Image 1 (cartoon, rainbow, N blue to C red):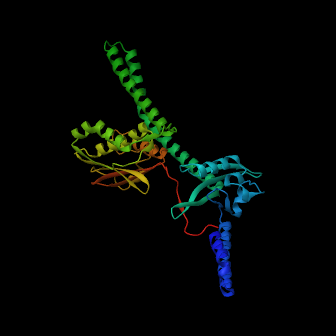
Image 2 (image 1 turned 180 degrees about the vertical axis):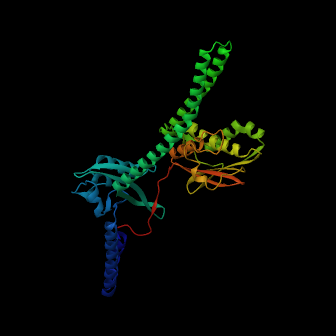
Image 3 (image 1 turned 45 degrees about the vertical axis):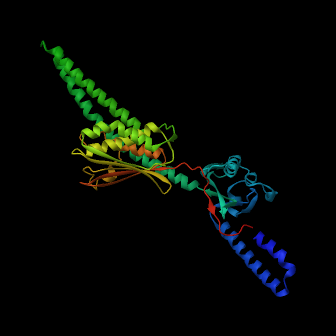
Length: 392
């Protein structure tokens, strides 16, 4: 708009009265459009601040003034972060505007007279014709949304803990029963005068020791499944992890008559991963594939980029999973194997979620199963908001 007015002023001396009238009409329409845009932006439930390339404020809608404490005087002479009085939000906006890398939207808690509120704040450059024309800062009140999310997480956690507690009780019951029986047998042996008493006691103690170890394993697995994971994320090559795992299990695969097909995209970016946990998750999936292909088959592992995500697809030609059981395979202690713990895929799901990823499964009985892991690519370039209009 400013560019248009400058051009109009330059040409004004050359215009006759009719052309001046037309120019006034055009400018009036432009003003109406700007007023309409400002009205729409001020009607939004989120706060919007638009700044120029030099970071001085271009526009601010009404919701911003209701959400965050602002410097009221001399606003037009202040940069975007200088207007915001809350120190944490101000520092975040400054870091986002001046930094070379993308800063993810962040939640901030503000104390008010009535209650604490949670604001989500994000920043995006506005680009036209390949050059940055300014920045778009948005502030959203997500208090109710975050409270609802927390409530759902608590409900899910409680339901999960209830299910796991019942499963653990069931798992513990069997070894405890065995221990009780063998303790009774030991008591009988001690009360008898048989010469074979010592041999019997050694046998009973051996069984009890095995059952105690089984109990310990159940407790360790349970704690691993319920405790928060301590992840140490470092830039890591997913392809290298996969190749190392294939080398690790290649003898097992050969013995089982399983052929491995690798299709790994060469130019995958490094991902922020906990190598130990990711290896464990992938190994659990491969072990499941091995168990599903008792008569041999093909294990296909593919990596590629799609929708700004690194995807890892692990496919087997095994027995598949019945359709009514697919939705249950990530539940703690659910297993279709006689000697399975029922925690392998639960751990896989938890590890992938800890990495901000997603885990999908597709299976057809008699044909095989495909697990697809989707992991976020670290952002090194700022997201750009493309603007086709004019800046005032």
